[in-house]
Each structure stands twice: as structure tokens, then as C-alpha cells.
Amino acid sequence: MTALPTLFLSHGSPDIVLRETPARAFLEGLAGTLPRPRAILVATAHFLTAEPGVAATRAPETIYDFGGFPDELYDMTYPAAGDPELGHAIAARLEAAGLPARVSDRRGLDHGTWIPLRLAWPAADVPVLQLAIQPRLGPDHHLALGRAIEGLRHEGILVVGSGAMTHNLRAAWSMMSVPAETPVPWVDEFADWIGERVWDGAVDELLAYRERAPHAVENHPTDEHLLPLFVALGAAGEGARGTVLHESRDYGALRMDAIAFS
Figure (cartoon, one colour):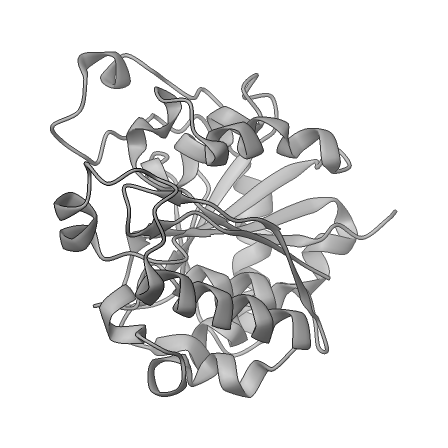
């Protein structure tokens, strides 16, 4: 079986499914560029726990963990099946790596999962599981989480880190009227720095991004939306490098980059 890449996807604002944007167009074409996975495991910035956790609900509901959007968005569902047996197997891999993990059989799919998957796999015919992140434990921990499940990509399971290349929502709200193509140097300098380091496989620099990357704190006031990138990087295995598949900007301050690791 051909090994799959692992992915980091910027899931953006939930209303990306309602608007014509470059990032939406990219996601709509994504599945056609990949072998069909037998399951998808999403490390999502909206599943936050104190210790590692796997959501393996047999029939997960669609969670609307956002507010203030058009009614149409709340009528959408993503009825993908889960896979409890696979979820327990993933938890066992984490345990074997010294990362005890709980398995949930009740959690639904948050918007960090169902929004990008609804665009990429609209038929919802691939089983979906979720991996929690632990925002207080930082990049090193999340790289270790990914490395513990590196074998999954050799077994037809697509590992996706769903977060945001940049995630300063206050700045984004203040720039909603700014044309998307308008340069925002402090956003682009950060995203380009990350893109260069993943291409180079500069893991140590990436792990220290808050100290070394330009405008890191402005782009990520908190870590949780970049931590899925480290899961995807780790799950690609030692020596992995990243290729930027897509870059665009939404609402001024949100870079919507997507990266494949292999």
C-alpha cells in the first residue's frame, strides 16, 4: 500500500462553505489529488483536552461550535461514520509511546473537522475520527503525538491537522472590509517563514516558532490553531519535509495555507 502524505489544513471561518474563495476551491479539489483513504483522523484545534484523547463515535453528530453565521450553515450536516475499533487501536499506539489516551464514543464532529471535510469529501463516505490537542503542552508534545501514530499513513489512514496558518481573530474582524488580495506584511512574513522551514525540514526551528518566527505572537496569540501542524509533521515520520499546496488569505489576517508532509 502506498503511504499517504499527512496534511495540515487551515480550516478558516465556518462560512467558507458559503463563500467563493481560493481556499474553498482548493479544498474542493483536494480529494482528487490523493489516494482514497480508508479512514481520516483529524487532529483539530477545536477538540481540546488536558491529556490525549481520540473521538471514535460510531455515528458522530455535526457540532455547530460557532455563532453569528447565516442560518444556512446550521442546516448543514456531515454524516460520516466513525470507527470505534480503529479509535481504540489508535489510542493503543499512543499508550505504547507513553502517551495514555482516552477514547470517547460520544463526541461529534466539530467545525475544524466537518467544514474542510465537507468541501473535500462531500459524500461523507470515508470514516472520520478525531484526535484531541493539549494546548498547554506545546509543540514538542504534539510532534510526539504525531510520531506515535506515524504508522497510520502506511495503512491507508489519512492524518490531517486542522487549524490555521495564522489565527488572530481580532485582527481579522477589524480587516473584514479589506480586499483579500491586499498585502498584510506581518501575516505573510510569519506564514512564509513557516513554509520555508517545513520545506527545509527545520524541525528545531519550527518547535521554537514562538521565539524565532517573525510576528509569532501577533499571528497566534494562543497556540492551539498551529499545534495541529506539529501532529501532521510528526505523523509523517522522522526526516519529513513539507510542501505548501495552497496559500491564500481570508478576512485580511487569516492565511489559509495547506501543507503536505512526507
